[in-house]
Image (cartoon, rainbow, N blue to C red; front, side):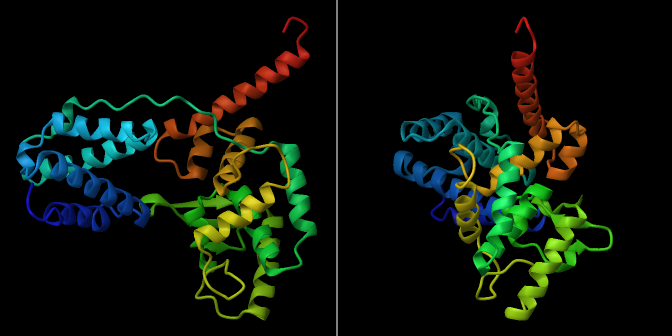
Length: 300
């Protein structure tokens, strides 16, 4: 391995950032994965040039990750990082071929997304409506309202700017993964809630650098702030164990599917790059049908 792994990693990271336009979080993950891999090679095999790295080295690293308790999902993400890196090396003629050809990704057991049922969601909306008397509760109301109304990701919502909201057409333009834009329609009620929030925010805080949601100090929301608020309010309803903002994204998609929405339409609303990512919500719909059948059919 070269004395300075940065000489290999940095051009690839620059390619992801400026040509592929990956998000900051994705780039951070890729960088960490590659640094971990090269550090492992250095400790276990000593100085090894890039062209001498083969599937045996990679399998050894993956086995060590599994021994350390990493899940199959996390290991697959690291395999994806390596595949992209070595593909780049072949593309730029640093290598003649990729050593990833013999690497098989571990299978991941399918887990249904956690979501809040419609009755509990109604209770949640009533709760946030009745407790909007502090700035944090107002933020919680807006976070939960927009998450459930749009299915946005946490990163998309905390960076949402006012100019992305089209009040006349009742829609929000979202900048998603890979800087891909999508337009999500929202109800007039959601638009009115946003307007009320803006009025109070402008009166009490003033300038917000164009961001819709801000802390009580007028700063852009940060992930932990939003996570803790949503977690707190999800804890007041239902029996679900997981109480993250992503649960509301799952809830948005599941409720759409359960009420007959087209799968392709849900895919577009969520900003998924492939239909396979959206199809997991059909399982929740099937589970609902099974429960209805079990309760209603005489021979169930």
